Amino acid sequence: MAFAAAWLNRTPWWGWGLVVACLVTLGLTTRWWLRGPVLLKVGAWLLAGVFLCTTAVLARPAAENRAAGGADPRPSRTVLTKEGPVRGVLNDERDVEIFAGVPYARPPVGDLRWRPPQPPEPRSGLLVTDTFSDVPVQGTSTFLTRALSQMVEAPLENTLLNPYPVSEDSLYLNIWRGTRPSAAKLPVVVLIPGGGFATGSGALPLYDGESLASGGEVITVTINYRLGVLGFLSHPGLAEESEAGASGNYGLLDQIAALRWLRQNIAAFGGDPDRVTIAGESAGGESVCVLGATPLAKGLVDGVIGGSGACMGTLGDTGRGDQYDTRTAAEEAGRDLSERLGGATVEEMRRMPTDRVVEAAGPLRGHWRPSVDGHVLDRAPADIYAAGDQLDVPVLVGSNADEASLALLSPPDSDVDAYRRAVREEHGADAELFLRLYPGDTEEQVRDSLLRAETDKVMTRAVRRWAMLQTRSGRADAYTYYFAHVPPEDGLRRFGAYHGAEVMYAYDNLGKDGDAAYDTRDFTLRDQMSGYWTNFARTGDPNGPGLPQWPTFRKATDKVMRFDAGSAVAPRPRPDAVDFWLRHEGPLP
Image 1 (cartoon, rainbow, N blue to C red):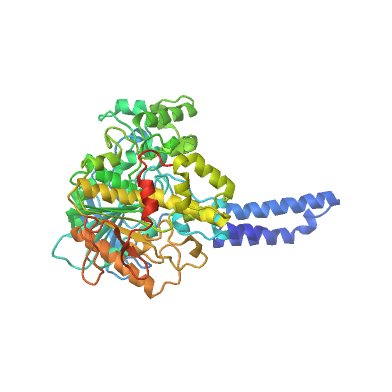
Image 2 (cartoon, rainbow, N blue to C red):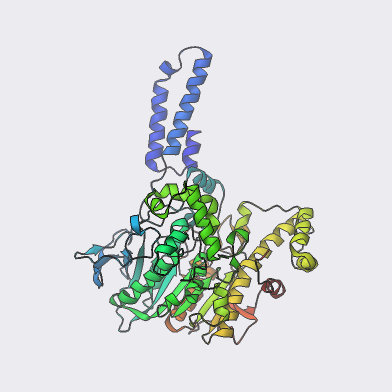
């Protein structure tokens, strides 16, 4: 049992040694602790088992900051930023310099908790940036999550299981630049991590910028921003003390602060401050969509890449199915948190331990995300795009074929009668049309329809609407894609082209989160996608030599670039089903 617990716990070598040492010690001392009557012996056996298993569970992997560079890191050249000099490290191939853990704002701790990010303090000495910072406060791996990951295969488990230390002091960014000399300033790709505004960080290997930067055509950047209740709490008391008269959206303000820092400093790294493309997947896709909608990002963004996430949802109350809270709903959630903390004031909550605040905020987690606060957002983002008030820059957006397949880890109820009854209750007069689009005559069909409907309405619909609104109200081009390639990972094929599968291809990071039997088709697709992404960062147009021609959304409204083993322009996926969801303006059932 102890050995099983150690395996489930992903116990490191020293933990295994400790378990073996305890077992040997118990074995050598059995003649003393197994004396006495039968009941005493049974109790001794039980205590020994509990002792050994507890030792195995407590010998958990330590959370460690990720080191930058390779096995033999050498110092990079020194770069002079506005705050002072920084020096990073080289990768093993010596073709990329990495600057990890560069502060772009002061630590948002103490009195700065739930305040807009403040510029970092100037430094007189050299800052060595050879280690990624702590990551924003979020859940960390537990014995249960580690055990499940050992027993059940899941995509991107190293990304989903945060292995790094967490801290409120996490407002840092990471920069990768090639060592190849360049006469011209290089375009910059800023990757904003996803994670439902509750998890994620710029230190995750899935988002690593080394491979993309090694080509010498772009500089890549990843950032951290405040998450959960620490990043998105709204409260009347916070609004009263704010110069903008608003509260919440601190995580978005962090993203904007990082872009402002890059505007001031990226030229020192060889980057072009007038050619900055922001990119993100999932909550990162929603983030870049919001940044395209807020006037606070004006002059900071020159292109947007959004994958499997968009800001095309409705305004109201996230507790009722909307994507965004009104200011009233968001502040009501803040007052609720205050009551859960004993009626604490904002100042009292600022002085509370982080763990206490996060624990109390758990039941309200649906509200800790972007809201329409009147400052970052004065309307639902979709309304901003519809009115033509967004940043009019090129966008490249898309989604995956099996976005909802991760639900198979805990399969939804597939009872046929219950499914058809729920459809009639939710869709009323549209029920028969819905059942034609998403049939449910067998349990297998019900399960497939539930996942397909979720993919169509949440992701495929959203990115199409984003491209439609940008094309109708703006002059800049939009490009749309559909990722249908199934990564060749043993045991994971049932998830298909799952949520997040495209990231490793687009950013040239195959194998960074779990290895697989990649073949020529995977490497070709990687080269195509990373080539398109690089071209888009350089010019606002993904097309370039050696790549299939990708038309704009305006020129080919019903076409997408379909990424798979034979990437090509193809008819947009499931048009009848997606158009069904496009008819809905309110909360989607």
